[in-house]
Length: 628
Ligand SMILES: *[C@@H]1O[C@H](CO)[C@@H](O)[C@H](O)[C@H]1NC(C)=O
Ligand SMILES: *[C@@H]1O[C@H](CO)[C@@H](O)[C@H](O)[C@H]1NC(C)=O
Ligand SMILES: *[C@@H]1O[C@H](CO)[C@@H](O)[C@H](O)[C@H]1NC(C)=O
Ligand SMILES: *[C@@H]1O[C@H](CO)[C@@H](O)[C@H](O)[C@H]1NC(C)=O
Ligand SMILES: *[C@@H]1O[C@H](CO)[C@@H](O)[C@H](O)[C@H]1NC(C)=O
Ligand SMILES: *[C@@H]1O[C@H](CO)[C@@H](O)[C@H](O)[C@H]1NC(C)=O
Image (cartoon, rainbow, N blue to C red; front, top):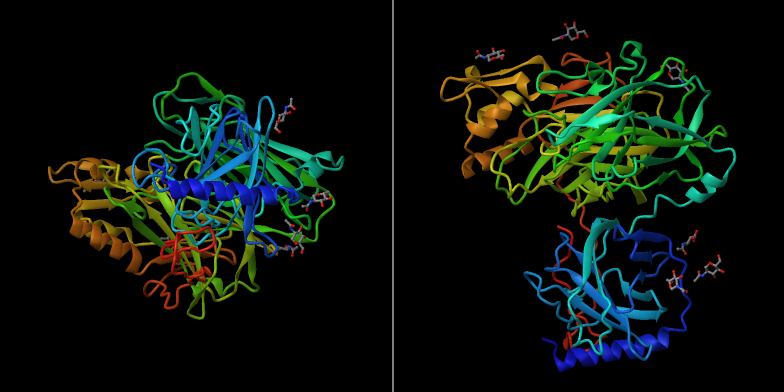
């Protein structure tokens, strides 16, 4: 129910908006199409250059009302919403509202109206409404906009309300994730496309048959690079075959170093099955490019490029495609491609890539079922980063988990104090994985400690989820791109817990399990003698035999955080390719990285006031934030 007071507030907002209509329309820097058929388009200008206001423009194919919301999880409950329309007399109207605490009842109006109309108009087909709001309105009924992934919920109805009391239920609605704050990665694409000196190189898979009898296919193909002179990659674009958007989930391109992969040419295959691995996966480990579902074009800053070609020894790359076919749709064939935009005019700054996180195996990464939040910890300690000879400036990156991921962050601790890192997302969305272009680069100094935290929600799982390549399995990897590039290939820093110790926490005795050589890739390489004296693979043991108690979950959470982990440090180059635990690239830590002084986001400056909520100018003090 709307109260008389809230109607007055709406009217107040309308009249103040009319005064602002003369205001100049900003040039929007960010754009998104929120629905598949392009009926709801959103343009916005983040708070920049000292302005604390975000300005949004909704361009919607309706003459009725339009709704936009910011939601923690895509649902209307607890979302911050704004509804706007152009009324029968042609005047724009706006109403700041919020989702009901639970369920999908009609969103009530906020007690404080924080959305301001800038302008509104409509023609025969479209309504265009521009409004602005502060990044942090200090109103607990509003969403604080952060650099996290934001779920934008949208709705409209062709009905023209006569008042804020007369808004009918939406006829169309949906949800779409977006990065609202970070600079767009696609600035300058039109310039690159128009420049006749831009070259393209496509890495394409050919006629991959997506199976209809299982959900996940990882497809691997070795490609020989042409013998071109050195170029810089200045942009890239995933070209998903039309119609296959639902199935092409992600792609990673790995360099094979100086390995000769010619025997694998023309023999693409599944990257692994239950019993074996496509062998180049173990040799081609230098990650060169990554794209995941939801990802957009990526354009390098105009002074930077990522080197490609020109090294006659590094001839081969591995394309790894992940197909996801949850409905087991038959007859899908795919020839998608990843396109590199290149220039011969080398740019002054060269970029390199490195990865931090956990190895993808069933005995290093485990997430017990029925957990609201379970966090894994990977460490790249000072002992590893101090092998770098100069700082690494991370300007973009991609955080990667699978379906259970709810939050992820890369923390940087320098001299016992955590520094601000934008490589984080407290509202992770598996279906929106786009490289973020950090508004403030993350500088990693030699000697810094890095912690990668992946937080998972497993309430809808009944058995243990474990590290693996399938969508139902999990990963915890942060792919980062930095400058200036160092002159080495393999650049990563991964850490892992002791798998024997893990299995003991899960209640097994040493003589009950066997961890085979290929444990890093294939679940069946780990076998367990179960309570019926059967010799079963670890995935089957997790599924059929393991019963997690609360006490075991507590011990497991403690073990994955605090047990001494082994680090694989390839920030300077491995002593030997595919090195083993006797190499100095591998070392055991004494214990977890401590973070005595965690970074705390400066509190928003929210004016406390007595008569809170009664007018549009006095705002209640914000007591909670969207950030955990
Ligand atoms: C938008 O861009 C145009 C042309 O580049 C410029 O003339 C105008 O002042 C800009 N508007 C604002 C609000 O910055
Ligand atoms: C902000 O200011 C910088 C330089 O001061 C300028 O390059 C940039 O275009 C400005 N951004 C916007 C959105 O006005
Ligand atoms: C109506 O407005 C929309 C959105 O601005 C625009 O794309 C469309 O061309 C307009 N239609 C006409 C007939 O002007
Ligand atoms: C990079 O290192 C290799 C050997 O480690 C050397 O042959 C090559 O010249 C180096 N390149 C540059 C640009 O320093
Ligand atoms: C269980 O089977 C695997 C091979 O399937 C074997 O390597 C392992 O030794 C067996 N475990 C025991 C305890 O017999
Ligand atoms: C590890 O590598 C060293 C040489 O770097 C070799 O002597 C040793 O046998 C290897 N150990 C294993 C377990 O493969």
